[in-house]
Length: 296
View 1 (tube, rainbow, N blue to C red):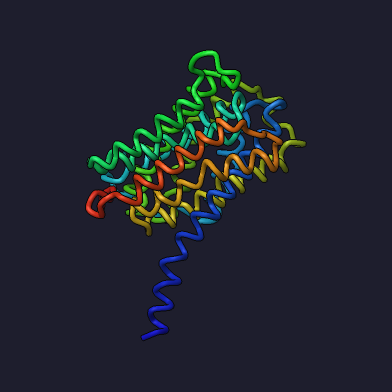
View 2 (cartoon, rainbow, N blue to C red):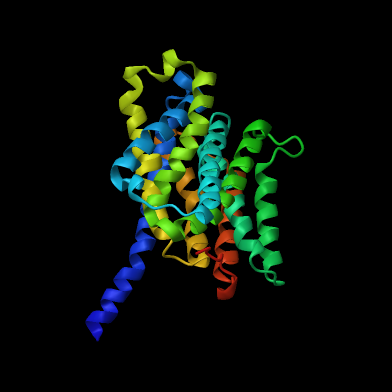
């Protein structure tokens, strides 16, 4: 009996560990990606990341063996668009604002998913914390720490698609499991690779000297983390998933400091703290019955 309980605890802990590894990998990959923005720009990095990541995911999961049902096509397509737009807008924001700030602003998307799933008086406290955090980040008034408003808009847009990515990822993943991410990545690559090609130019995008870095970005930011995240997403309730994802802004800020030398002002750290607390609070107090439903 004791052995079976130990195995059950280990099994329940596995998706948590996978999600933490996924978030760490994504932030390391984002830091690496930002180092080559001056060479091929954010659209070019997005194109290479999605293209190379898709190839790797296809080799791993072999999705051509799957039998697709018509009812699952719409969630898969929506998942792929959300994944691609999230990546594109996030990299566009990174070209204008620090990594930690971009992640914090982007995180308002999944945070909204958690808050809208529960409507109790306590939730107003979490909303107030989000507003307080954003007030420290958004360029209101004549603050000396004013951020690029276009970069902010990109990050918030990425947050919208991150929320859709969670919702449609759960629905699409319910039918095909971890292999879903390979199909979603293919859809995203078909849409955003041409965009990157047009905005960057083929002479830069197909530069062989960039291939090792681009491959590293694809592995760290797409193939490795999204595989782990899809496994965790289909095994964790929305409450637990959202609570763990609350660490994302802090990991982004730390990654920016370590790899990019992007040190934040005290007011920006306060903003991150408010958003993280709001996320932990909203997802830890959500009712079980309000978790996102999966479409079978």
